[in-house]
Length: 599
Image (cartoon, rainbow, N blue to C red):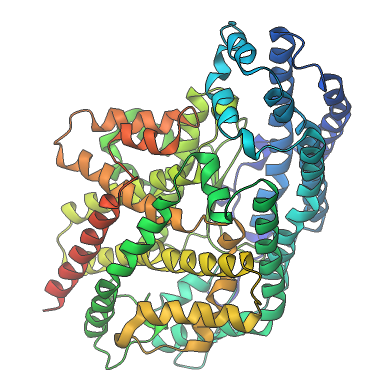
C-alpha cells in the first residue's frame, strides 16, 4: 500500500451501518433536541422516589428510557469519529454528545442517595411489588455500595464534572488520532511505507526487517516528541482517579475500580504475582523466536516478525468463514447470528483509511447493533482480531436480547472472557484442521501475538499503572522521565537477557495505550484470557456435557449477577490464580510447539 485511502474512497460494505442508527446527521440533531427537552423532567422526580412504589417504578421507567436515548446519541458520533476523525462536523457532535451525557448523569445523580436515605426494610418490602421485582439485584448492589455514595448535591456536582473531566481522554485522543504524525517507514530498498495508526500493526508484521525496525522506531519517536503532553494528560487522569477514590472513601484507586463489581483486590495481585513468577517463560520464547528467525540478536521490532514467508492471505469474507467454522461448538444460533452481523447487517467497520483510530473495539447500545471498529489487514492476525471483537459483540447481543436495560451491561472483568474465548476456540479448530508446517507456524505467530499482547503487554501495563497510582496516592513526584523509567524497567524485566532492548523507545510505550485512561482495565485482559482458556478447554475436551449451555448462560447474564460468581457458575473460579497458571501452561505449550517445528 503506497497511500492510505480517504474515508470517501473505501467501499461502503467495509464500513459500519451508521444509517441503521440515524439515517442522517439531521435525524441525530432532531433526536438530540428531543432528549435535551426531556432533561428538565428529571427534576419532577427529585424528593419523590420515597412517596410510593408506583412513583419509584415510574422513575425507573423514565430514567432508563432517557438513558437509552442519551447513550445512542453518544455512541453514534463517537463511533463515527473513531472511524473517520477527519470529519469536522462529527467533532462538534462528539462535544454535544459528551455534554448531553454529562447533563444526564448530573441530573440523575440524586436518585442513588435518595434511595439510600430511605428505610432499608421499607425499600426491600417495595421490591416485592410486581412492578419493582425486576430491580432486586440492582437495589442489593446499590445497598452494598452505600458507604461510597455521597449526598445528592455532591453526586450531582460529580455528574456535571464528568463532562469536563472526560475531556482529558478527548485531548489525548485528538493528539493521538488526529495531530500525531509519523515519518514513513523505509523498507530495505529505501522505499517509504506510509505509517499511520491504521497501518502500524501491518508494518510491524512485515517480512522486511528494515520496514519493521523503522516502523517501530518512527512510531515511538513521534510519541517521544510529545511525551510532555501525553504525560500531562495521563497524570491528570491519574490525579482524577485518586481524587475520586478519596472522595468516595476507598482505600485506593485499585479498590475503587474493582469494588463496584464486587471483585476483591487480591484478584489483581494474584495475576501480577503469577505473571512475575512465569516471566522466564517469556525469556525462553524470545530465544526460541530468535532461533526460528535465524537471527544472532532479537530486538523488540522482531516480536511480530512472521515466522514463515507463507503466511496465508485472507479476504474479509474468508476470515468470517474461518471464525464461523471455529465457533460451531456453540451452535447454529450463535454462528448464524454472527455471520449475519458480519456479512449482511454491517456490524464491522473494517476499512483502512486516513483518520481511523488505532486498535480495535466493539461498541454499541441497547438499541443498536453491537458494532466493531478495526482495520482488516488480510492476515491471520486480522482474522484473530475480528474473532476477538466478535466475542465482545456476541456477548453484547446475547445480553441485550435476554436482559432488561438495567442489566444490559457487563463488567470489564467478564468482557475480556468472551473475546478471548472466541480466539481460543477458533485457534484450536485451525490447529486441529491443518497440519501444513507453514500454516502451523503462521498460526503459532497469531497465537503468540495475541498472548504477547494480553499476557505480556497488559500485565506490564497493569504493573505500570499500579506503580504510578501508588506514587500519586503517596504524593510522590511524577514526570515524563519518571513514567518512561518505570515503563522501561518493567519491560527490561520481561525481556531479560535474551532481548536486545532500546530502553528509551520502549520507555514511551505507556503513551501508546489509551487503555490506561480507564484505570485497571489492562489487567482484566490477562484475567479474561485465563478464564477464556479454561472455559474453552472444558468445551473442547468434551468432559463437561453442560459446558456450552453454561457458557451461553454467562453471555446472557449481563449484570444480573456479580462477575466472580457468574464465572464460577460457567465453570471457572477467578478468585484463585489457578486459571492464570493454566494459561501459562498454554503459553509454554506453544513455545514447545514452535521449538519442535524449527528443530
